[in-house]
Length: 440
Image (cartoon, rainbow, N blue to C red; front, side, top):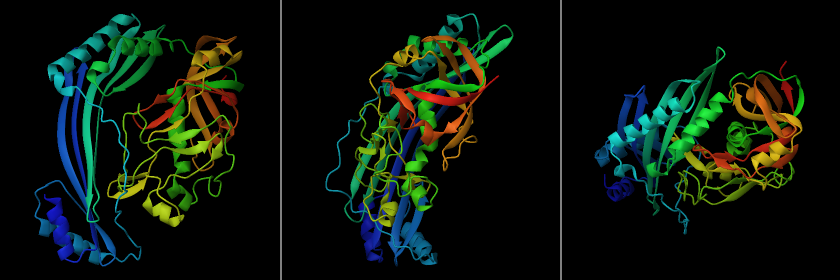
């Protein structure tokens, strides 16, 4: 479809604004089980979402056939607009004068055949099984690669495009000892296949799995607790909606009217950086065409800003923060590379400085055991007991309970091991002065 012809024809038919949002995605997914290929899926898709304003009403139309007749598309948009009864005012964003430059990570997917990728998986599976005689099963061993692009063109002159690519390995391992089994999971995301370090992946997932064998609870009490980086990022992701301006409009965040007030420990700085160099996804613009930039959401414990799209920014009489992203045909608000700023000490330093405490490496029930409005949580947890600065034994069948905002005000130290997840949420390991643990 010629988008400029579409825009010209829309103007002729009386549309006051029109925008095309085009996505392209190519995905390959492979899996092996016991040396045999059990998954081989490939997809290559294109989708176009068009929104247009007619008679002050915004209509949406989606299609997969990029060669669809222009008049057919516009007639459907016009009919959809005329059927609407909303009084809400809509706008098409004209774009910004300057957009940040981001490095496009060049992948090497085409330098490896599918047979090479399958052989990589077979090697990972084989090395895991050989690494420890307590490994009894490799339940999952999969590789996926993804290339995607987003292009936005509208009648006000906006014409921007961004591309992303990444690949990942997923392994899940089962170990057994003394009639007890434990499973471990590892997800490794890279921009290039050649960046995978098979030995590191194998060592980590095997260590993570066998180290939890013979785990048992600890006594119930308040412990100093270190939450490991990936697990802390999972907890932050559960509560990231509190920074969302849509939640502020609906009054379902405790941060309403709290801008420029202290809400966390001065040791905590939370940043939203769509341009983060080491992130898997980098965004020079959001899905409304607004230029993206790095911003402090919480700075030294002080809440600085909600994240906005154009609609929420208009409601609060402010500017969009470039956080408008699509969910279906609707554009909501989402953080992009939202992370807690790391400290200077290592995780090992935090452990060495703990006399009697816990290192939590997994939390369960993050969707059912959390109240994002109040901040309260009660979650199953597992990890390790720390005594006199050393990890003594694995711990399981415990529950950690507390309040997110209370714990974020009771921080002893933040480690330097920031881990950015592929979901765009990151955190270092953090040591809290005390959390309530229910066990024996």
